[in-house]
Image (cartoon, rainbow, N blue to C red; front, side, top):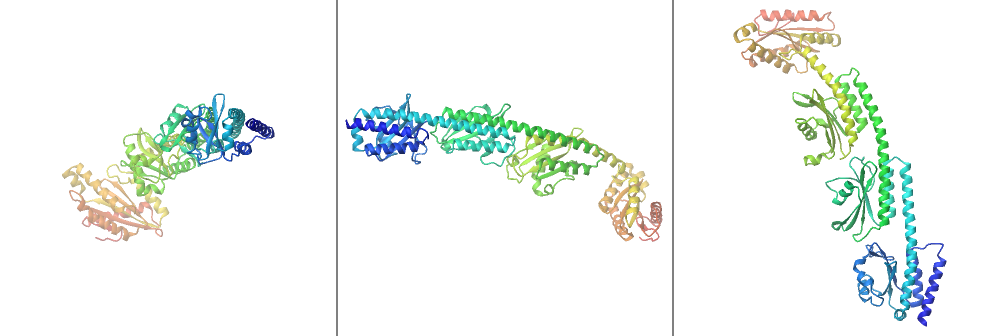
Length: 616
């Protein structure tokens, strides 16, 4: 009779609890605390723990010491036994709960809902020997099944609400950062105990958001690569990191943009409801990313077309090489914000830095980049797109991202444009295509300029000696006499040159002319210019140099030439100077130098003469 009264009392108390809290759903811990009060009053039981069964794992409600749960597989053989035959189950549970004296197994629809661990008391032991314990087990099973269904419905509402809120965010913005942040925060709210991260494909722009990474085929786990390639969710039993890893592909209608990774305890099992939520989340976020990408891509294409159009218009203007390279430098900085820029043009089979090149490319640290580029273009005309340069050369370097586009003229690489950035994966593939378009549009203009320069070089230079031609010298001296304050003009003539040609042949004579021309340029450097005056005569013009400066230079040349020519020849020279306070024209200056040369020839050769002042 006493046990029947206890059972009826428990039913009444549970009914009162249910009615009292029907309008205000309680948490699982709150229900357990109220039920604990019932068990304390009826059986003097002070310690109770409920282990909720979820995805084949039992999770305790009130302790975090077993946060990973207890796998049902270790308890299943005992859970199926009848009450009071739980001694093996109790023995197992005592490893986790020292007070465990008995267990109630709560079931519903043929599945285990959870287990209730109960402390031993004399009143309970007496009650547990009666058939009423089965009634209590059934009563609690029915009640917890209803509660659990309520929790499921609440959880479903939470998932749906989360999806709805994220969908609102995704539809209200075209900002990729906002989409990624909403996705990360949404996953954290649904799975607060689990770590997660997004791995985006390489064609995504780098984002400074926590837990967002770039996909790397060389480093990712096989299950992650499989999810990314197949577009299907994968689950990896990652024992090496003591985790179970879920990989959900983030895919839109046109492609896969990355993978969402969620790390759980190794014994955790995702429910079908959770998997469905994750699939919905990755699908709507994939569509949102795709729409944002297409939106920005359309704007970028418009901007790129405007940039190419502006560049084409500027290149169609009559700009010189330096103006074109300066303009391109400005466009590259505006479009790609690189750390360093290099323009290099081929000169005597070597790439030489041109205008617009940043200071870094003149330093020793740049040699590794320049050598790599030169080696590449020695056998290929393809552009270079490098995301991690130090992985190619197996050494650490300052700049990892690199784009290099060749300047191709008549199907040969005549130069290149290179841009660098400190960060790996900094430049997108769209940037690479835009840069190719800019440089290819510019190559024609640069080609035309180089051809004009080559043609002008042929006009301005003597073919044999590579000295300036007489017409160029005339223009140069006339400009100097208008702009400078003074200068010196020097005529040089090879002594007895006709005899050299007659004795040794014109080929030897040509070799001597080239040797002397080379020595004149080495002697003058940037002090002035050297020209072939005609036949065996050559000229030197020295702006802002007086007679004394010219005499010093000419004396060294006259002394040098017999030692560097074979057969040995000598030079005779005439020197004339001008300055602003003399009413002197260019023709008078030439005449004066010619008179001085005539004097040098008639006074013994192998010497110089200064106009109106003869020296030897």
